[in-house]
Amino acid sequence: DAGVIQSPRHEVTEMGQEVTLRCKPISGHNSLFWYRQTMMRGLELLIYFNNNVPIDDSGMPEDRFSAKMPNASFSTLKIQPSEPRDSAVYFCASRSNYEQYFGPGTRLTVT
Amino acid sequence: GIQVEQSPPDLILQEGANSTLRCNFSDSVNNLQWFHQNPWGQLINLFYIPSGTKQNGRLSATTVATERYSLLYISSSQTTDSGVYFCARTWNDYKLSFGAGTTVTVRA
Image 1 (spheres, rainbow over the protein chains, first blue to last red):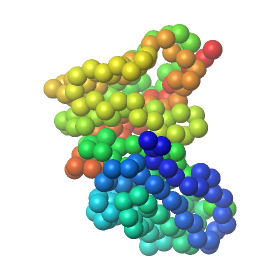
Image 2: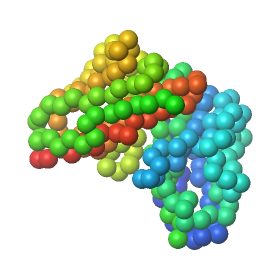
Image 3: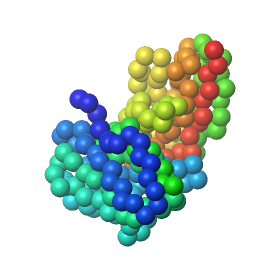
Image 4: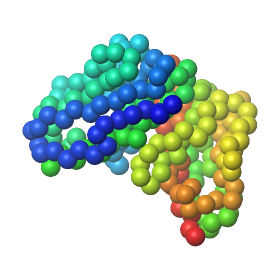
């Protein structure tokens, strides 16, 4: 298996622009997670999907953030409008039973 | 909340040395995982080890659930072992509580 796939790997954008991050989970995994990692706050869970349904979005910082999972093999995390404080590494992870597997991450820089 | 304490916070090793990293939990050890975050930022699964001992090459891990701790052993360390090692446990069915990590630097 190719593992969790994320794109793009790096994104540099200007404040106010829309950013869309993409994730393909491991085939057969029915749980998908979006995390954000910063030096100050470490790894934070943003949203958790089970069987394509959002179960817990309490970690989504504010209304500028939205996530979708239209099918079992694809999810997006969108930030609109982006702000400099959104700069971080965003990870997608999928789960089989209780073991989570992380994608390579997207390094987002908002200038 | 769930507390996950890792020690030591930093470790500097000479290539070829062995080391032990520790993870203590304030609550039960549920579905413990060890990860390695390499210098490029990738989070790599090392072990899923809710109890017992597992080995994978030069790495091995032991979890003693009754005493709420887990150990990660690195033998014959190599420069590619550098990075941050995290332990994490599952709570509330899906949430992962991460420790602060142990930063390992292996010098040639």
